[in-house]
Picture 1 (cartoon, rainbow, N blue to C red):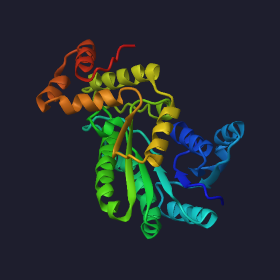
Picture 2 (tube, helix red, strand yellow):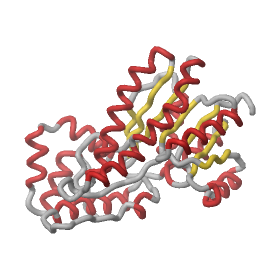
Picture 3 (cartoon, one colour):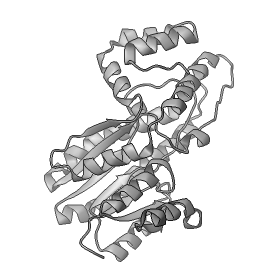
Picture 4 (cartoon, helix red, strand yellow):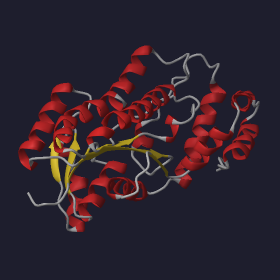
Length: 292
């Protein structure tokens, strides 16, 4: 291997992960792109060839202890060291709290939170010994506000936000940096994979309607994944780092709006009677237009 920084990007087969792997490779990183199935990584490899860059594929399932252990052992064997880890792999999860089973919460948390923890634990001992490194955890805007009817996803991303903030304190003495990248709605295959509507009672039909309205507006306004990739590269390479990086459509507005709001205003948003009233209140509170 060359003297280029060695960077691992999880979930690199599509969306933000693929854009990040390609962008970092183009920027001079030696990129190890993890995918759950290497035979299905054709689009990533075709894009890399078209750009004239190389990425190293590693088959790895972040929901499996032994897969993470074996995958990172392979990377260390091939590269010798890891400078940066981008914890991008994850899944969505819809459902209101009442109608979401504990098992479903655990499924999503196991991937979105525990998957990132597994990967961080795989690199931290050597990063500590080396005296440096970067861990970028890709969370979501829903890690900063209680997005309606997305309870499993909210739970996992809020948890990852908190663990990331804690980790940043814990590893600072060892020269290791943690960055939290908080995408809003970004062009990604997650739209096609996240269509479950477990509206079992019918009581929460307005909540699901409001969630779908956010998705519909997001499809129209979604930010290209390369913009998130550029932020991730900046978070890794900057000499003036910060902990959190909001990016993509609606992220900054929602985060800033929720920070300004009182809890009473938050509850009042839930009490709006019609979808039109909700859209109007959302625009006023977050400066985000949900009209399509």
